[in-house]
Image 1 (spheres, rainbow, N blue to C red):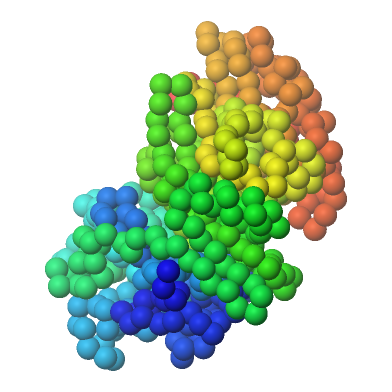
Image 2: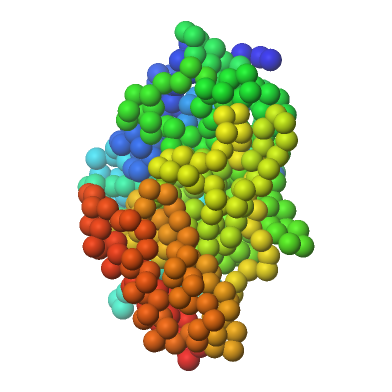
Length: 504
């Protein structure tokens, strides 16, 4: 086992003497790479974004943007990182001082003012720039120079298929985790929609054709604290039996906030994000099994819409930067009552596969949560996978009520999965978040729907039942009365959406 090292902008750098809890952000800044900024220390602003080489979906390697403020530097042992400083010399120009294409567009289109957020925007844009399946649309107005990449007309913007996708195929959701307080977003959007395709001699584009760094076992101990990664699930489970006090991390999108904001420290952190046994996705005859350490972005791209309710969840779950690190195992493992995935998985009647050194057991998610941030998971147990039974209900929806459209915590989250045959609700499953100490199934509302005609009268009566589900509370995000009202409105909205689909 070698001393932990990270390849940063093409050069290896030892993690030592950093403490095991030291973030990638601080690790980089201590080495003079100050383009990586701290804005919020919670993964909300994106000023800390960097690129990491990860296993790809359509190519061997994807360049993935992540929040450097949340990841421990030790978590990137053996991996490759590119910062905003490294983008310039990694671009096709290849010379010091030359600008990468995304940096060039940000500069010429006025996308930077104070400049504090700009390196993070550039890294998120670069990840989208290098996305292998990004392709130009053809239904756009020609630019003034006749290249066919114009971004608007006198009647308004024309950005391809919809306002959030450019004529160059750029998905603005890639920037949903980046905040700017002074420039405003239009010039940043214009820069994103103006970048072309990587050239054949672009080193980072060429790098996608090679495999990403293989996972390495890590044992980093300093000052009595340890960051550990084992090579296999079996080794990890034996380690957890020996160290039941260990904090288990995957994307560290939750633990990183605890470290930064609440100054929490752990004597032992065990990383499970690269375990092969936790990174599988399989469709079987009776269920789809999703590895607990797959990131939400990886799940989204591998499923490619085959589980429609999850497809509705993903764009509303935090931001792309967070989804590039967050996992279903982590979201369920924290036991938070306001996590966005539990309501969806409850509506899908999912189960969790729990593993320890003695074997595995399967627990229905409806029986998993036992109290506020508490579950049936025992010391030494890991969530290995999530199983969603097949076939899937055809009528689904996920309604997230929050103060911001993206990158926000839910006030209320409601997930529906209904079977409606011949106008009758044969089966109803409803998952709720934000209205009790745990995520929960709306059992009374499900009973009020099943066996009844799917009509306005049934929906209205069931909505009144749904308003009384859970034990909502008053807090800074919403009042109990508002939460109850939103529960009822969500079912009425579902009915309106399904009837519109039938009559349109």
